Structures are given as C-alpha cells and as structure tokens.
Amino acid sequence: MRWLRDDRGTVTAEFAVALPAVLLVLMLAVAALQGAALQVRVVDAAAVAARTLARGEAGGDVEGRLHQLLGEYSLGTVNDGDFVCATVSAPIRFGAFGSAGFEASARSCALAGGK
Image 1 (tube, one colour):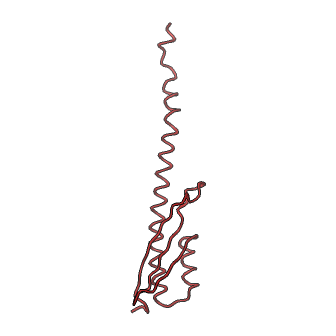
Image 2: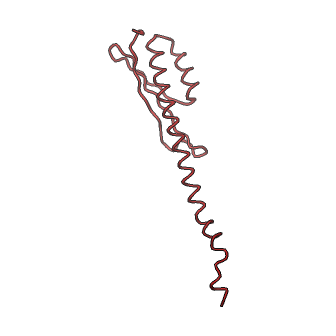
Image 3: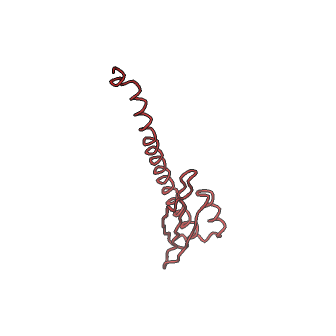
C-alpha cells in the first residue's frame, strides 16, 4: 500500500495542466501590446495625413506615407471649415489569427493651407 501514498509525478502533472493556461495568458499579453503599439502608429499616421492634406500636397503623397507607416489602412477625409480632418483606421492583427474584427482608429485635424 505504499504506492498509494507516493507523490512522485504530481509536480509533472500539475505543470502539464498549468502550462497551457500560462501560455494563453502570455499570448493575450503580447496581443494587447501589439494592439497598443498599432494604436500609437495610427495616431501618428492620422496626424501626418491631416498635415499633408492641409498643406495641399497630392493625395498620392498621403497614400505613400500612410502605406509606409501602416501597410494596410483606410483613410477618410473631411473639410471642416478652416480645418482638414483625417480619420485613419487599420486592422489589429494577432499573428496567425488575423484581425479578429478589431481595429485601431484615430482622427486628427490641421489648419488648411498651412496657416
């Protein structure tokens, strides 16, 4: 009956059960950091787009700069009185899982004509 009270192997079993949970939490943390980093890049891209459009530069310049900053994005522009506003959004990618429907978005405005 000694083998019923033997604790050998319990640590291995507990580790095998806990490891997937730890890996899942780690993956979620990395995905959250990727999303936060993309949000910062989208805010910068919206500011660049608004300033570029406000200076009256060609649309191709804006497209090129945004493609360089973000890769995949969507751009919306609005003339609001003396201001030119740009709304930029980009899908948040989670590695092999794709975008999962999450999107980073930002809006920025600049005085038209560079005044």
